[in-house]
Image (tube, rainbow, N blue to C red; front, side, top):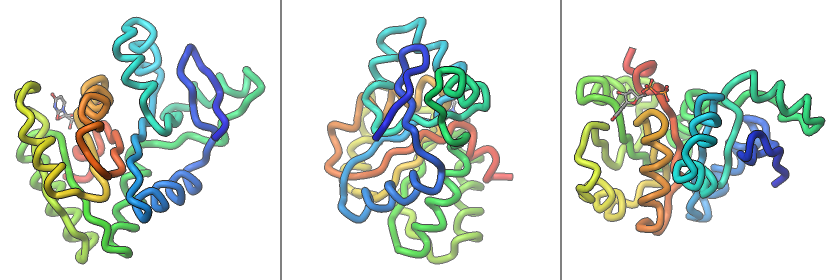
Length: 194
Ligand code: UDP
């Protein structure tokens, strides 16, 4: 995978469709994967906090969630093909999960938003397998959520804790899991919940 370095963050030179294809392959071969869709605020925060930057650097893919980052890559003469957003990736991965019976786990948002997200996903993708879900307001030192994910072994985990929490949570826990495609999806649950 080729990268373009923007303020110390290696963005993957990949378009949306190819990312979805790669993630589907990772699910099928039970390979762990960690996806970040980074906007300019994430890049700026990473430049101010080395520890956060180290969490980002653990990702398998960092895509540009913002036209400013795509423009910067063009100026650097190493263009990113397009914007790839967490919401768009989530919607296509939900469709694939429905078609191929991949199991999913939803982590994030407040309880009410999470439940309407789950209900709306079940309405739109009736044969989807939801392995579990948990809201995003929990005690950081409690490992119960990670233990549940470890036990249920979902194929895909959508993490909607907002930045910088979502990237940090995945980076700090991914070593505990044997499989799973972990995708940071920011405010996507708020959109899906309607
Ligand atoms: N969120 C959460 N736990 C937290 C903070 C935020 O679950 O401790 C959720 C919040 O409810 C929202 C989502 O994270 O559903 C995204 O928040 P925001 O829009 O601030 O993130 P962004 O999309 O800007 O990264």
